[in-house]
Length: 145
Image (cartoon, rainbow, N blue to C red):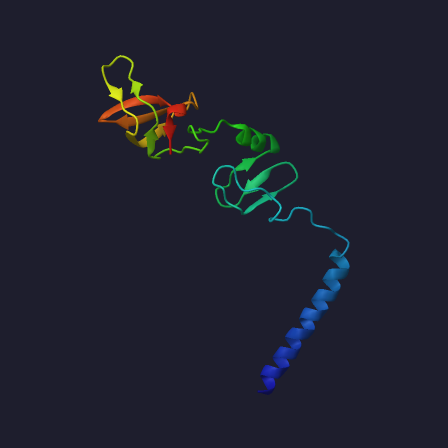
């Protein structure tokens, strides 16, 4: 019982001593780079990032990027459907207009469901979709999520 009380008082006095001396040493230093103020990683979207003065660093995927890289990632073309919703790989979409398929006698009717779309890397207005067993490219202006 006596040892626990002594250990508790010793621990408290060490904490007070450390707090007083460290606050006098580090009290004038302001830390600018707080983890809550840095943007999420542009590669894995992790919130655990830091800024070292010239580069942003992700502690989870070890990706490094600059402010210019962030601006480029924000300005990259997003693929939007006819209603303005963002499309992603694997989404299921509905055709909003009858479409004739070039080079084929096939007509994709309004309301047809295209499952598991793939976004085109070259053109954000085209998506690759499988409709009635055939893979075709469809303009995003004729699709809705």
